[in-house]
Image (cartoon, rainbow, N blue to C red; front, side):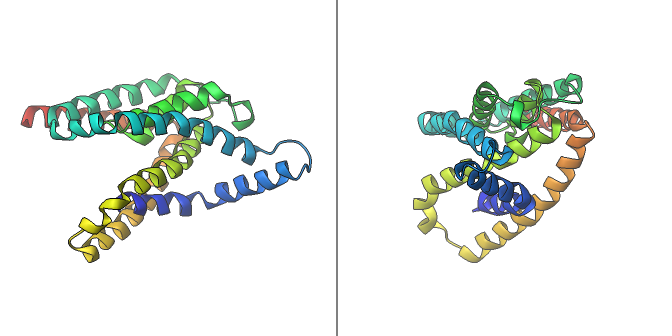
Length: 217
């Protein structure tokens, strides 16, 4: 339910990109000129979703067992921080969507699948992978968050059977609304930080929190 809140946040924040994708599909399928960026964007989202889905379905139970191991969560935060820190050496100007390839999509999809592990940031892993592959900073961020839409929808479908176990639906809905609001604010902040090339600064936060968790446990 909390992820549904952030899902709506992504859809509201990136509504122009979603419309561009829909327009690109219509234009391309209608044969009105060359392939549009929006259609290419959707193609790579579909390709990236495949490895994410396979990892989620095949390793879901194994990954869920990690949630009872706080020290592992702390260690994964340290790893997340390491990869974010390395992004400071990526190119300022990278490839745009029409120069993106299937291998880029597959690797980003694998990064998203591995983010099921608690402590591995989904956005951090996918944006970093895009930057390491030489993609444009703006494209890496937009692709990361638009890629989250099918992932969250898929996870919601898998978990929907548990909806009947919710004891306090009102409180849950409040949490969903708060997640939406915080999601909008976080997206606005993160996109700006990524655009100016300072996403590596999040590494220090991950390292501090990771070490605190390990020490306390």
